[in-house]
Image (cartoon, rainbow, N blue to C red; front, side, top):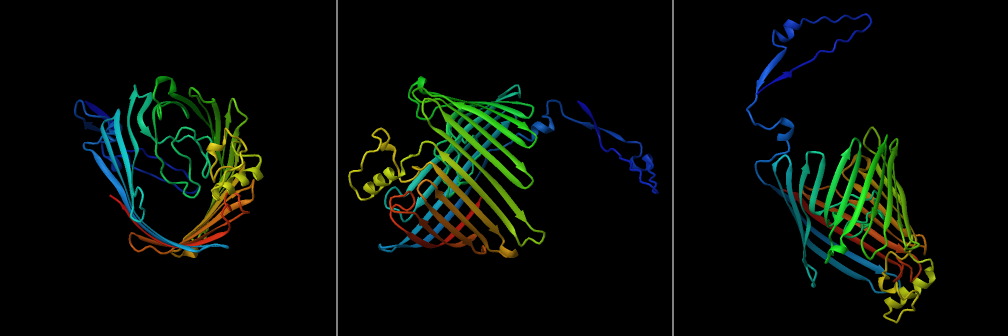
Amino acid sequence: MRRTVLLAALLVLMLTGTSWAFDFDDLFGEDLFVELEMEEGALAPEEALLVQDRLDVGGSYSFNLRASRTMVKDGDDSSKLDVSLGSQLYLDARPDPNFRAFGKAGLKYNVTEDKDPLKVKLLELFADFNYDNRVFFRAGKQNVKWGVGYFFSPADIVNIGRIDPLDPEAEREGSVALKIHYPKGSNNYYLYTLFDGVKEAKQIALAPKMEFVVGKTEVGLGGFYQHGKHPMLMATVSSSFGEVGFFGEAVLNFGSEFLQATAGGMYRYTDSEGRLDLAGTLQYYFNGEGYADQEGIKKVRQALINEELPPVINPQKLGSVALVGSGRHYLAGAVNWNRILGSKFSASVFVQANLSDGSGLIHGTLRLPALSKLQPSVGVSTNFGAPGTEFGAVGRSTAVFAAVSIGGSF
């Protein structure tokens, strides 16, 4: 089979007072078009990029050491040493352009932990295939990009576990699902069939989602239905204005009065000399599932801490009461300064506050210059809030730490 390939095209620019003259014979001779031989049955170049002749295996490793000292107001100070090893391994097979198999597992061993020091998680294990290169399928355990929030994401209703605001970019365990994806122009249509915790067919959950792009703005609309649970509708939006990125989410839980919503923004500034490389993120979160009676939940929390019988505010909800997540209004923000004044030092400050009860925490980290794969850091964290509040439950405390991490990929 022969294909004719255009090797070059010439654009002639005409500028006032300037003339350009080219001789096509001198540039190309007589061979402006060249015939290339291709073997019969060979893959097209764009398809060959999606094929691997062998199984691709790789991963990462880490060693973490952290020593900390905690000072408690009107209490006893304490010291702690944490030593842990971690690793991830992935396998990626693409035997033909229409099929891919992928798996990833994570392992963490906490040397200083007496109970269950070894934790192994299967993060992802799925297969990709398609129908007529129009409808795309992913079956198996997979990470699902559902919400757009950074510290909080109420619209992220199909993944296992919620985002940890202290480590929002940490990889989370995926859900067992069948994803059907139909792209149409710049829009995307999805249907997720979810199987986590399913013991019979009627427990299978369905989550459709649509994404629309208008200029710089992307809008998502979705829903969630599972037998025995209240149906949910969600909406997301993400956009940008200049160097500032905006995002927002809202989730409505039918059959209850609960509404969850969040909005936030991101901004990065870098000067021409590289002395100011600043990035900031700020996000507000309304948690409709939180308690309106914050004084009552303070009494519950204090009783639990003192190992006393707690006063019952809502007997049906008491079983889900935790020391976090009981407020209705939250605010979180972070500022990162990379390469401080052009140096090899970097710093970050994170603040999370429960606006409902006036409590919060502050966490600052200074990353020292790396030595090859060794990254040292020091930091301090503290909390604020009255006794019984979410972050001030056990009183004011301040912790200082020094840490060293070694990591890489293979």
